[in-house]
Length: 467
Image 1 (tube, rainbow, N blue to C red):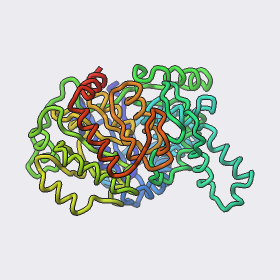
Image 2: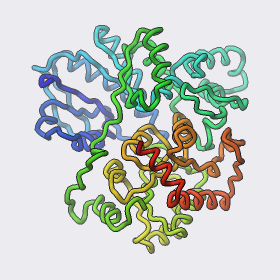
Image 3: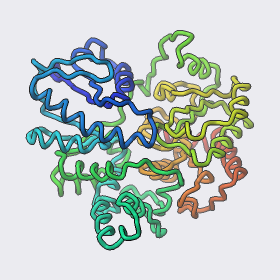
Image 4: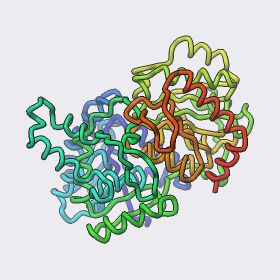
């Protein structure tokens, strides 16, 4: 639709990231983007990205986006607080659709209050199965009644023990009697395996509860980056509950890729000083399917057990397994690599590379990339599937343990490290075996995965992930 225009509100901290993603959009010229897409930063403060900053960012968006939205409705001028560029909405039609991220749900509520007629779509970046678990009713094994159950616990005396609402909510969310966790796709996990790490969770209980209200009450529908072929039973369950019962629509748009999985173009020439130049130089020097990319995403990182990452990287060095280690996670600053390990990696430039950020899709599409060690967030999970890269899962919470089990056990297309478990999930896994958790046990498991990647097991899993 040539008349369709977009206004994207982002916290001023993330405007640069948004523009970078847009610049990598395939088949869309910069001129078209400039004419039809406006990226507007809001808020005045720019907190350093961290787990603690998430709540501040959440409330900033709740305050400033509705204010900017009112200016748009009045055909006024909105100033981006990041670039100071002014956007004139004098001749821009009033919005008819508002897509609101799951982590800024009160923004959607306020916009709906301002414009009851506008269509509100809840944007949910994980999978359909995760959507059901977070928002669905108890009969689907879901947490949709989490807020009501917390309030009931508070009324029944939990507050008398000095616990805050968030503490009570967290305890209800992490109770682990050792029961199988229901899942539409038949993923076999005990409830305690949903929290396999004792890393503190981000302070976002109010955000998650408001997110539930947006998804099932205020929104007219939801959008997710999944496809029904990946999780057909979950899609059927979502249809019965969300559409047939709640009369809301959902849209599965599939993973959004800037690099073609079937015919990836080589990266454009970059200046020698560009931070990505050393990444592609390293990849170009390696054998096909030999390099392991290590990335824990934006938020998660095993910072309470820094020895685990040290064991991982030392074992890869010992086995001469080429790897790229990204330290982009917010949690990395709490537990950086030791000076000794950094020196060992620097002394092995033919085998190892540390970087602050990776262009993940371009790296996954490179012919020398053979596996990705990931926390198992939805974005990385979909990307390893689309690019046919074997995953090595190290999940922490949320939807990650289900992704890990689904690809490892149900599809036989990935590996999962279990000796790294430190939280409640360190109890006996549903799949069998035991979690020893020592450095020696972790190193042994990693060596076995490395060996399997090079043998028949790796070939079978690569064939399955490419299917």
